Image (cartoon, rainbow, N blue to C red):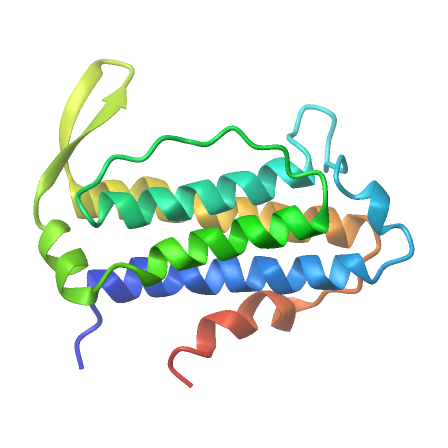
Length: 168
């Protein structure tokens, strides 16, 4: 069984979002959970709600890009755990809609990316693997770090368990 672009993107994005959902479930149980929405690691960093928003948005961008569709970042106000869980669920459903063959086929095509020098043509698989996937991991990891800093009892297994479930 070959490890494909689908495995490296869709499966891994699902793992990251599932991990994020579980991390948020742990946060909800904490006595100070109501104060976590605006928590951040440092003053110039975006808060927890943004980390959730951007991880989910980027996962939907992965689904759209690997399906050959455009996707626009939604405006949203994630001011409750219920809304954050729903947002993650929505992104997971978008990832579930695409099939492996489509991802692997579209990954071999090109698209455009905006860079400081303007619009440039790039391979779809390069855009998704070098831009989108690192962003998903980063924002889920930042949510994890914010919640750890706030005293939520999270460990490495809370982060990694969702990634191995697809193969174990």
